[in-house]
Image 1 (cartoon, one colour):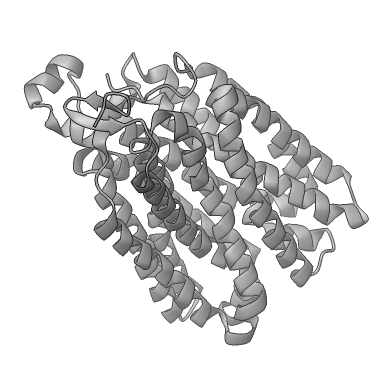
Image 2 (image 1 turned 45 degrees about the horizontal axis):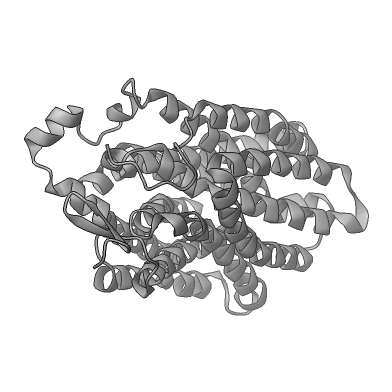
Length: 423
């Protein structure tokens, strides 16, 4: 290969020209995450059917969400990141997809809320696909295309939720939730097989594995671990990333996982709410990709600062509107949330060097999933004591300020969309 189309990372050729294989890796990673998102969306979208069969209510729903999200967050932070940096991006991605598929299909055998919660909690561990897919893309594709291609990962979230919203609204009401969970649950398994047989390990991970132990010790005196993220040279960025990821998820949680109860509280019927979720998520697919392109122009920091403020403002406006404006403004808020997350993965990949990129990315994703879990525990008691509107304002105003502070704490790359930092 010519020097015009490749760079070299410790003897491993890293192509700078976009090729068909790069697009294929992106598609597999994005569709893989979309299959996991479709699985994740089954619970909120099919809630009325589950309520009838398993006697679920908003309180039990919160515990199921919390158990799954916290399990995913803890595993991502404590085990997943180091596994990605030790054994590779590809095998962890395949295992995560397989975990979600297996236990979602097993959840169709649930006989009560308790057995359903156990199966869903283990299935949720596979949601760490989000961070792993982002690393796979970021370390495979050319630097100048990384922004928009990594942004397609959260576009998979919107596509997955749209598929589930459409499927549960039009199909599950006819065939029941168990066959629906079985069919949607099989999708991640198909993608896991495609990961195993059609993609290769990332060039940057292979480059790091070529280093001998003495060389690694001389350069960093470290190994990929959670404690390494809090070394003096990484501590500030780790704290900044953690703050942003913990507080950035709440508006998306409100508009995606609590679509049905929130819109029901505003007087919107089930079918209309399902249609709103479908429309908003499909538009959000394009918005996430557009945000990735925007991050190429402004850099991930600049894009996220602007999108975070706009996202918070849209949530405030959602509280203020009524009548026929509720559904359109809800869609705007949902689309804005998905657009924000279109610029997030590139930010996470740029924040950490290659030797701890898997650990750092999984730390960020784990913090986000833990935030979902905390949100799930707090929503029901907060709404019962106050209201959905009060909760929305609490999320929209102070949490947006904290997100901005987290972004400002995290050092920016030397230049926009630079080649990922190794050492």
